[in-house]
Every structure is written in structure tokens, then in C-alpha cells.
Image (spheres, rainbow, N blue to C red):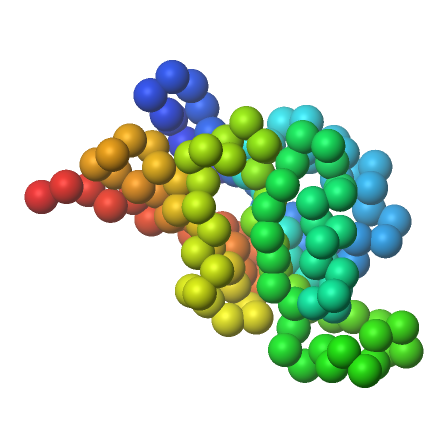
Length: 138
């Protein structure tokens, strides 16, 4: 778990390769009790199922991307694969902006506004390790 110091506390960031969200609810619930932000890889959801990400836990919201190789006409016939998502505690929603136009079906990113001068960027990719970028003023 990564920890970033904020002005008034700590931001706990966890990463998890779920290998599908089917039977993962108990483990996911434990992760969400300790994480503020959760980067999920291999959720295996089709694009039409991405709304499920916001139903995983009542305190969390987020966004994700599904594999571009998953064709809508195969939904229900061919199992899903790949996919990435970033979920965050709803209390952080005023500070987090999804960067939906950045990335591919292999990674997604959010901007966390720590203060007006220094945004933090969190990138979640298929490699399971979140990447953090903190822009420093000159």
C-alpha cells in the first residue's frame, strides 16, 4: 500500500489484480476499509458492465476502462478479460477528477487536487503498480 501525506492526513493507495470481480467481494470489502484509492486491474468487465464498479461498495465510486477487444455482440457468450479501474472513497470526490480522455484500454488516470498549486496524478495500469506523478511548481 502506498501512502501519500496530505495537508491534514494520509492518502492510502492500494492496487489489486482482481482476475475478475465475480467472487472477489469479501477481499474487495477488506481492501476498501483501509484504502482511500484503489487501482484495480483485470476486472474483466465489458464496457456495458462498467457501471458495476460504482456498486461494489457504498462508500466508493470511480471509473474504469474495458478491453477494446471485447465486442458488445459477444457479451454473455465470451468471458471478459483485462480492464483497469480507479476507485476512490466518495469523500474524496470533490478532490478527484477522472482523466477519461487520457490512456488506453490498458491504463486510466485521475487527477487529485492536493491544493491549487500541486496536483497529484495517479495512473492505474495492467501491471498492477499505480504510478504517481506530483507536479512541483518552479
